[in-house]
Amino acid sequence: ATEILQDAGTELGRLANVMLRRLGQILPVALLGGIANLGPRLTDTLQASLPGMSGFSVSTVDPVQAAAALAVRLRSTGD
Image (cartoon, rainbow, N blue to C red; front, side):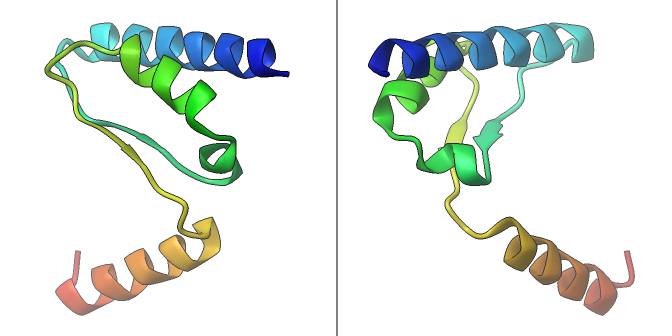
């Protein structure tokens, strides 16, 4: 199981790097949702595969709650 999580972290890192290259800039990468709860084997492998200047964060906030909070914030700012 740990090898599967490490492979998943490697693949997510590869995909994040593809997107960063396509965008032409180094941006922060965030891991959200249920996958964020799978542990350090996945998250550490993912973080290690990112460019050194890229920020990395893991959020274990429920995605529905995060979406609701974003909607409230956008409504209050008029964006």
